Amino acid sequence: RKEVEQDPGPFNVPEGATVAFNCTYSNSASQSFFWYRQDCRKEPKLLMSVYSSGNEDGRFTAQLNRASQYISLLIRDSKLSDSATYLCVVNTYTGNQFYFGTGTSLTVIP
Amino acid sequence: EAGVTQFPSHSVIEKGQTVTLRCDPISGHDNLYWYRRVMGKEIKFLLHFVKESKQDESGMPNNRFLAERTGGTYSTLKVQPAELEDSGVYFCASSQGTGSGEKLFFGSGTQLSVL
Image 1 (cartoon, each protein chain N blue to C red):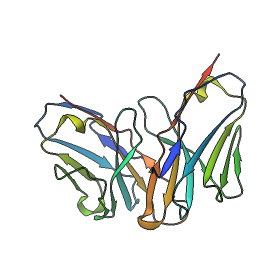
Image 2 (cartoon, rainbow over the protein chains, first blue to last red):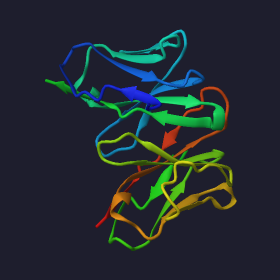
Image 3 (cartoon, each protein chain N blue to C red):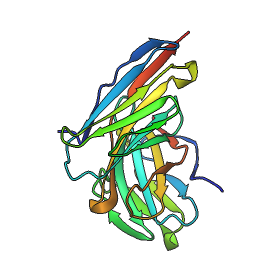
């Protein structure tokens, strides 16, 4: 079983739409959770950390459900510039290891 | 502040040749990671340095891959001899310490094509 699983998509949504991505992780000892954004042919860049109580950064809301071992990312009022691949990343402190999902592809359509 | 830098950005070599990739982490970051992404697959861990020591090299595919981190600064990843299946994007990432919420910062990657 993979450490981190994501629906690869693709998600094609119109501008202004709300879209949500989910991610599940297998190791219950995982401690830190992140969403990274990767543009085509670029490196992953940190979008936001995910905290236990949930957190929001502008149009982006991240939530963590430890009991069900899943993480979500909600994007409101989608912009064309949101088109990218969104990577779910989980860290286990044992060896300070980071695990990546395959990424979810989002295309925002005019 | 300079980010993680990688060199070269692209490398095209023939099967059997040797290639060396370099990564300069963010200054002061003890942790340095190498990852590889093959098209259509997830980013996969190769190895992890803490300063100059290899903390975990369980992701290294085989003994054709050799990574070093001299003096705990920059790191090199050598592939010798390269095979077709080694093609992919090699990312280097660094993080500062081992505390809660450690974040990874990535270099722009080296696109390796083995022909």
